[in-house]
Length: 376
Ligand SMILES: *Cc1c(COP(=O)(O)O)cnc(C)c1O
Picture 1 (cartoon, rainbow, N blue to C red):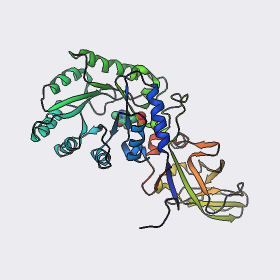
Picture 2: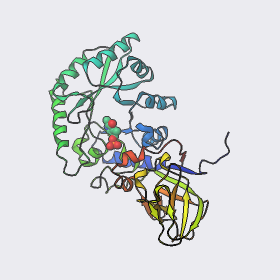
Picture 3: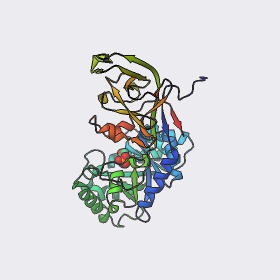
Picture 4: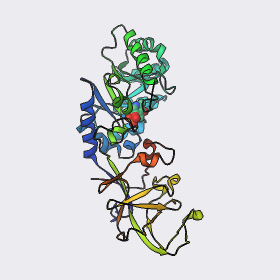
């Protein structure tokens, strides 16, 4: 066993109490009777799926959403019993068999997929297989055509091996300023529900992601599927800033070396930065192989005891370099914060994504497993 502390070099701090508090806060925003599914795909957006799942369930989430079978199995292996929906397609009968055994709900997009699921359930005898049906109302990704939605629901309901527990769709533009599509998607989705002989009773109908949840309570329906907001990040600058969501993660690293260089020294690969004065450079043991996006080279600061220190030159695979000339107190072994709160200042995933043509979702799930997760 290694005796090394996980905080030797660089690490991700995760705050489960922030996730729990965010979940509780979001649940309070929902219309009466509406439930919250915590979306914990991509290893809980880089925070650790099991940690996030447990914190969300404590905070009032009633179910969990993942993208892959493997992610669902990880939750079951950890002893988590809550309902789990697999949000991506699982076309292979083998995968569906695992779902049934582990009580993971697959997403169906067609009658063909429903027949495959029914055949898998039939092999196991009398057990009914809980499934959900997804409809496409404007995303053009997964889901059956919404125009055929009511017919699809009726056909699936005739299969005795399946138990259709949910009907859902996904919003394409809910985080865009001046979004016109979301209400059209809602209208299409509602028209399917209204065309069902029983008006969709007994079906859990859901449409909203974080942006939809924060945008308009009319989108809440029976359940919302919340990812980004759970992690304390708002999906757009015009959404959710009035809520006191707490960032649930910080990325930190240690100063591994300090060097003094004369004016005119080129720094890092390609010498994209050249010192214009005698300078004190600090080398930090984290790089793009950890998820510090290389396109941010020379465009970010890190925080040291609440003070900003600029990163200079190209970000390399395993190290970045700071210009610490004006920060005399910075020394070898000190911690710096790349993302998250430090003193009164905070650097958000949005601050990075806006500077490298990305989105906060991609920044968060970009932190690699080389960075140990430390729960605080
Ligand atoms: C990822 C995902 C969500 C969560 O989206 P956020 O914008 O992070 O809230 C919801 N629904 C589906 C189908 C998803 O794939």
